[in-house]
Length: 276
Image 1 (cartoon, rainbow, N blue to C red):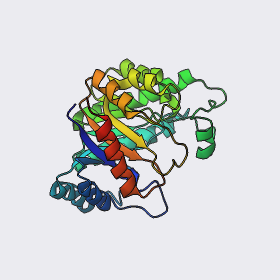
Image 2 (image 1 turned 90 degrees about the vertical axis):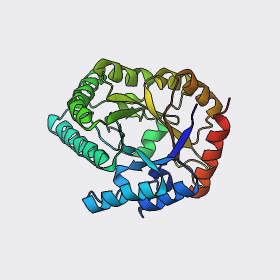
Image 3 (image 1 turned 45 degrees about the vertical axis):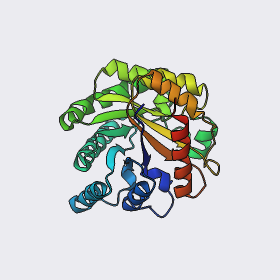
Image 4 (image 1 turned 135 degrees about the vertical axis):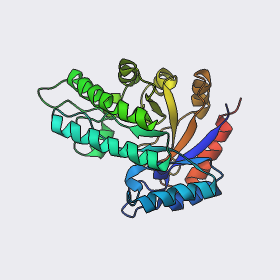
């Protein structure tokens, strides 16, 4: 495998009160000899043209790719008005990614939000009951209809919608694959997150590997914020090699250690594990 390793800008921030500048993360990525960065949309300071252009030129100066913009949306809602707002928000994210030169955006299916506390949601392993009066079948219809509305825009921009196994309706490999295969578009693929299948981790990753265009490599040096998984990246490598995966390995450091040290250890772990 021709290994290309990058980092999510999230690895240096973790939604703390003080936002870590994207430019700072890019400088750290250069020092760590990474090939690129994945930009977390909510970490951007603005959508102003001058600011976005400064991010692009910074990437050029440092020799870094911006290979993905990680976005947030929730299509699991019985309200058509709510879903349409999420669709329009995601169209703006596609435009933003186009302006940054990113060939993909990370998207989520969304979830029921019947467990309000994210800490409680994590304790329940990302599983929650549906809204009373609705079923998972309804949720699939909402999500697939919403993504279908985005596909023409994604094609026009030449940007792939990378659907992550990010809780909610994509909490199992079967559900994620069902959405992708049902819509059957080269502009809708999977984003494999190695830390989001808490149970049956490797078999679940294997089921989505051939659909994946990007991999989030979760690491937890210093102990995880919500949980810690002991991920065998040698097994992950074998799964990806078997699927003939050629894309980026995007580090998502989610530990409590200093971010620079945590990401550096993550790079060492990935490079050591991804060897024949």
